[in-house]
Image 1 (cartoon, rainbow, N blue to C red):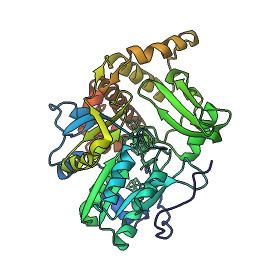
Image 2: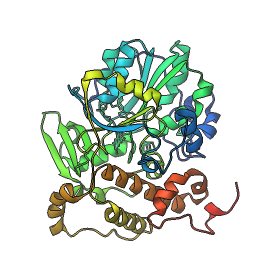
Image 3: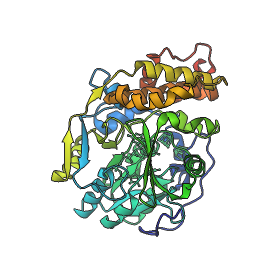
Image 4: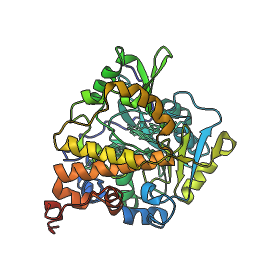
Length: 412
Ligand SMILES: Cc1cc2nc3c(=O)[nH]c(=O)nc-3n(C[C@H](O)[C@H](O)[C@H](O)COP(=O)(O)OP(=O)(O)OC[C@H]3O[C@@H](n4cnc5c(N)ncnc54)[C@H](O)[C@@H]3O)c2cc1C
Ligand code: SF4
Ligand code: SF4
């Protein structure tokens, strides 16, 4: 399960985390002023409208393209590096952007995660100053890393121009504190994120997928409705979503944080690098001027095309809503009969939503999950935690804050 030798600048041990309810340990509770969590946390009282305006100059405009789903953006593209980087999750656009910022001297350091030396799936925060070291950070890991705990050590080390690669809950806290942190220049390269869990629990999932889980080196939920697994000996296996052993996972497999996270597409990043709207390629959302600067760094190293959109998501999202409601109410899920699964597994990539329609369906499903789970498990928080765009997306499927709910009791 080794993740390779450690590297990156050693800035001493990271402080222990204070206990927080609904927390993904982004690192702020480990800083000199853990009280900042109150104004920095996505799970307390997020202000997406205000932060979108501060970062991008305006908040999302539901009348503008797909902004209701994906947040403010200037343009969206399908993209692939002409020379895919070895070890990357897709073609390596994320780490290549950071590498270019470092090698041309635009930033002093890159804050990201690397694999733990003992467990390749465990993310460990690291400040990278040597561009070549970013090759060791490539790939996706499952779990939480206190990334932002290294912001203060970065400043103390004199790194005033910083690039951060982060997932949405980390980027929210970073943006909320950006002004008071006082970096001279900050580049934020975000990836989408969903359905994360602790590294320990993720190993349980791997054990259900293979008899040799320790040999799995890569896993991705692809936009063609298959999970791709790669093994240490170079073999590749794909499993249709419908055949995944999801029903064998315990109900608490995904923590409430990741079931109710309200920012799938990392709306506060300068550029979001994902795949779900890319129909087999990477999917970039360039959100502001700095995002344009970043994409410009790729030069001829990248091919780009317009995103596609096919199919109709409405029925599959409505069926998803019904299942989440049944499961949340303790009822058995409506499962497809076993005889139909191979046929549907073959058909879904052909008839299911593709490209941007697939991405819209994923964002709507996430909004539905957030509303149902939060209202059920933390109703008092729901009112403060659910931004208006999430309520608008879930509202299209008949979900609304229930009147008389403690979430709607008027107290502040
Ligand atoms: C838990 C998780 C769930 C995701 N779910 C989706 C999804 O549903 N849809 C989608 O479009 N994209 C999702 N992504 C992003 C996607 O997997 C790719 O990382 C992204 O498309 C970039 O690919 P790349 O080849 O450019 O990345 P690379 O060049 O390989 O770089 C990946 C970067 O991500 C960082 N990273 C890896 N794991 C973590 C982690 N656990 N926490 C913080 N940073 C990490 C690495 O350190 C590296 O800097 C998810 C990522 C994570 C971590
Ligand atoms: S700001 Fe970060 S550390 Fe603090 S409660 Fe939120 S996720 Fe946890
Ligand atoms: S799903 Fe949301 S809350 Fe969970 S790790 Fe990803 S960004 Fe954070």
